[in-house]
Amino acid sequence: MSPLDMLIFFFFILVTIKAATSCIDYWKDVDDEIREASAPSKAPVRASLSRTVRTGVPSSVRVTPIKRVNRPAAITAHAYSNDQVHLKDKGAA
Image (cartoon, helix red, strand yellow):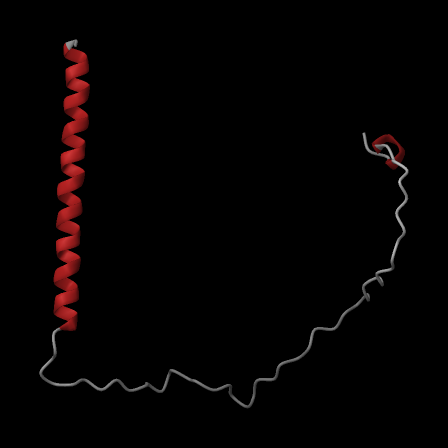
């Protein structure tokens, strides 16, 4: 093995070790946050809705339907025959 090959392998080994240690640190932090969130608090906190949060629709708002300008064409059944139509006959290039 040449020294260049050994340097390349050493680089990949260092990158793998760095990724593994940062992954372990990340999941330790997540576990700590979950443990802190699941710990019972001493005083219960009551959440209340503020006046800016509205759950209902105000009476001044109306829903208006969308008016259609052109009605869509009616779909009709078409009997297909076994005749093949070439693309040049349809106007395709």
